[in-house]
Length: 91
Image 1: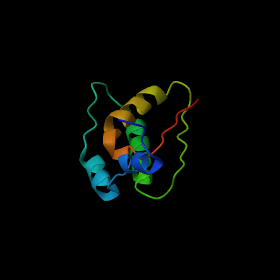
Image 2 (image 1 turned 90 degrees about the horizontal axis):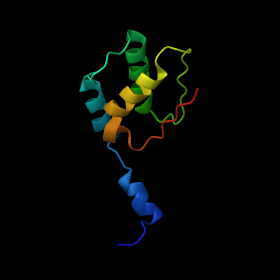
Image 3 (image 1 turned 135 degrees about the horizontal axis):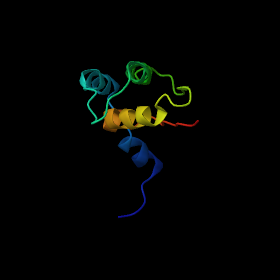
Image 4 (image 1 turned 90 degrees about the vertical axis):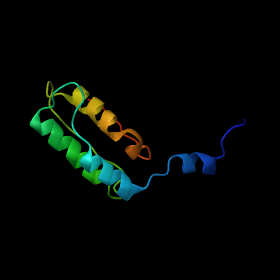
């Protein structure tokens, strides 16, 4: 098997946005650790924005407010549903 062409790579990242958004809306917040209410609200806001054509977002949280847990929870929840998005986290 050879290298993927750019079009083949793009096709691997395609997602049915409506189906993905519906899956996120019904997915539980169950990760083996608790989220604070504002972390859950931040995740829901990001997921809602992912359903639009907006391509860049910034989630800003103060030191000690659980950015790492937020990022882990988003990755657990997102899975394939957000595979066409690039999520970047920084301090």
